[in-house]
Length: 208
Image 1 (cartoon, helix red, strand yellow):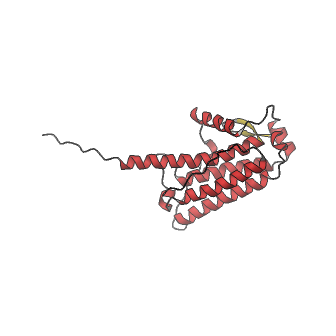
Image 2 (cartoon, helix red, strand yellow):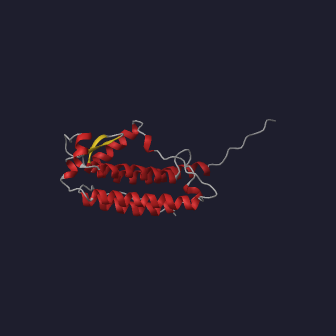
């Protein structure tokens, strides 16, 4: 039985609310990823990413955000300028991201590289490492975010490859939604692949 999927039903805006929601989504996502047997965890969902690829993409993305949050703030201001608008609400940012995807936006340099399964590194070991790295990335992002006051979240910005400059508050909100989004995408792909596999193969009639 597939576990319930993580979701955001409110609109977290403060640093504390965003971090708490990220940690909850992580816990619920881990339960979801655990529902895949190890062979299925590494198997493409139809023609799309395997569950392992989604997890590794999220880890890679969160590490990039964490690195940005750790930069000295004068360097952030010098490199990326000062926000000239208010931070968008969570639901507005979510809609803007969905629109960017609909226009053809892709993971780009944040796409996961292939996982090497060798006799020295079993699939179970590779899976454990992937999930451990993912948990570490969440913890590191939380720790980096907690160094920022709520007021500072709106005074600095970081670049996003699809959405352009985002305030720190928006970047945290995006990261939260991004983690939700990929669980839902993986589940949709899983169901689509299951439906294709369940379709009967039409019999060919022989002439005569």
